[in-house]
Image 1 (tube, rainbow, N blue to C red):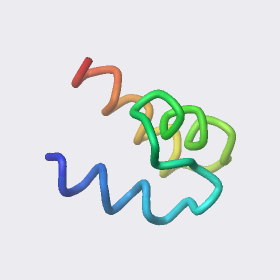
Image 2: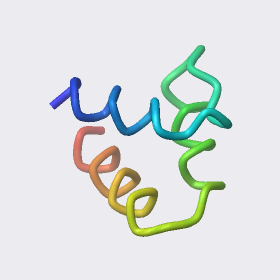
Image 3: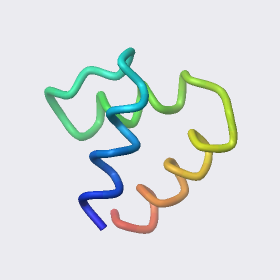
Length: 46
């Protein structure tokens, strides 16, 4: 699962990779079905 998250995060260079939350913030700011999917996945993991 973590491999998928890392790969998805890599698709969005805007997202800072320092912390978990900042990565989520970057994904939320980027629009698209991939971003919303990622956020849903993150909420499940939390």
